[in-house]
Structure formats: C-alpha cells, structure tokens
Image (cartoon, rainbow, N blue to C red; front, side, top):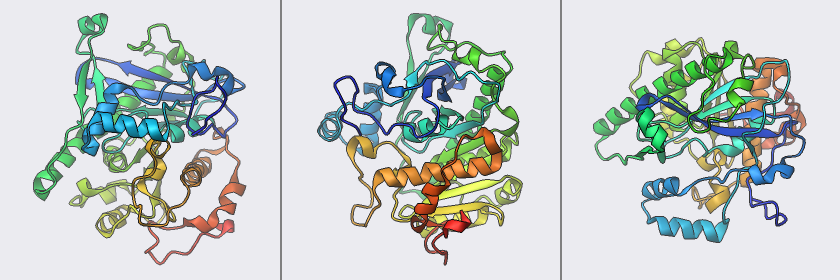
Length: 397
C-alpha cells in the first residue's frame, strides 16, 4: 500500500517490469455461458503514475457483500476494517490503455481464481506479469465459487443495463460426500469456462471477436489481433483454481504448460486416471509453506511428475498469492512466523516469471535472476518443507 501525494491514490505495489500494465474488464456473450474476465496486457505508456486517474478501484460494493458472506460477518464490519487498515485501494494499471505497439506476439495466460475470489483478487500478480510483456486473462467463474459475478441474460437486458448477479454459495462441509460432489461439479464448470476463455482469446487473435459488452468504444480487442501467442497458451490457477487448472488440462490440450499455485485439491482426491493424462504437460507447482497440510499433499504427490518444477516458499501463507493483505492485513497462520507480505509476493511472481522465461524464451521480458538468487534461503525445491528438501542453492535457480 502506498500513501503518496494527493494525486496518487492508495494503491497496490507498482509494477517492476519494463512495461506499464494496462487492464480492462471484458464481457463476451450472454447468460451463464458468457465469458467475463479482467484482461491484463503491456502498454506503450512510459510512467504509470502519470495515469493514476485511470487506475481502477480494487472492488465495488457488490463484491464487498460477497466477501462478507464468505467471512461470515456483516458488510459494515468489513467496510470498517478496510477503512481503518487501508482505505480505498486502487490498482496501478491503466484502464483501457492502448496495447503495446510491437511486432512480437505476447505470451498468453488464462488464470483461474480460488474459492471465494474473483477476477481482480490477484491484481498484483497479474499486473506484474503484464509489465513483463505477458497477456493475462483473469476469468471470473460462474460456478457459485466466486465472491460475486454477473452477466446479461440477453440483448434486451444488456441494452437496458440490467445485470444478473450470481453470489458465492456456502457449502456444508460436514458431509464429506456431499462436499466432494459439489466441488467436482464446480470443477467441471470451471474447466469448461477455461476452455471458453481460450476460445475467446483465439477469436480475438484471429480478429473474429472485437466486441466488449462492457465498453463498446474500447479498441483493446482490435489491437490484440494477431498479437497473442496462441500456440503456447499457459493455464494458471491458485488454490481451487489450481485444481481447476489440472482438470481443464485433461479436457483441453490446447494449454501447453500449467502453473499450479498453492493448489487446494480436495475435489481431486479420488481421481485415479488424471495423473497419467497430465503427465505430458510441463507443470510448475508453487506452494505456500503453511497452507499445504498432509491430506492435500497426499493428493498432490500423485499428480507431480518427475520432470515437473516444484517450489515452496518458506514461512508463507495462502494469502501471499493474493491482494487481500494490502486491504485488511494478513489473517492466516497468525501464530506462526510469517515472511513479510511484499517479499513473499515478490518471490512468488518472480518464480512464476522465471519458469515462464525458461519455457517461452525471450518473449517474457524478465531478467531478475539476482533477486531470486538473493532470496534462495526462502525457497525450497519441493512441494513442501516436509519432503526432505534442501534450501535452494542460488546456482540451482
């Protein structure tokens, strides 16, 4: 969080890459089959602070109500906590800015959020990726797992501006069989939505899709024609989105590498055939130290292949992948020694960038090996600190 001059609002951390990140919400299609995403991309702008007036707020009131439901508190209490801790937070990406003019195609990621999250929940991670030359489509799922989401039923509802909202559904977890059934059903929906998002991006790349129902004047989709590296699309997800990433890949081999971030794999605990299907996909498993309990690791070990890349960041929590500590502080694992949030987040996104650089080459504009070398004592080269893993030596990064 920053408390800058009167012209610079409180904000998430600024980008570290060579490009100013741009962003825009995109809605394509109608009903529950529509695709809603926050699209992140590099721009030609020189100074993000000069465009602070176009930084979006982190969330609106509809999502505030959804987060309150998830936490089991009245919305007014969450509003008070946010006001006392951070105030109104903005995201330092330039809304609707023109796409970077270049002849090179952008590495492209479809991103699946976790349980109770939404398309803007990981803005720090997404804007950092965009600032290194990557396009990120952070989709918002319509499986009742997001804090909230919306769509237009049809043309008439769109013309009148009447949105249909879908809010988070609390699931009874005391009945394990029922809980598993619901999560498996949600994973099926989510996987389908990842594929629809890729269909959309291919349509944008080919110039067939240029309409954004949320902004008819925007030229961003037109500017991305021919600019996306559709041949090497990455699928990435956090928590429940990590499980979504694995499920979606078994159904759609157009995704070429998988980034599985601190995944919650309860919904996959009885899947026996998936590990074999997933063996052909290069994968990064990036875990938080304190989230990965033995029941989850037991499932994960079946999915991790001998050639997959594995990292655990010591003394991190599930929150180190998200923006929320900048809004309301860190709530998880309070009784344990936790790494500074900013440092933990930086280690996480630089590990992601390092992996993408290895996979995709110079189209990823990242060159910060020194940072990871310096932080090697925080990084374990395995899925948990309990796997007899050694602290990562700088030379091994």
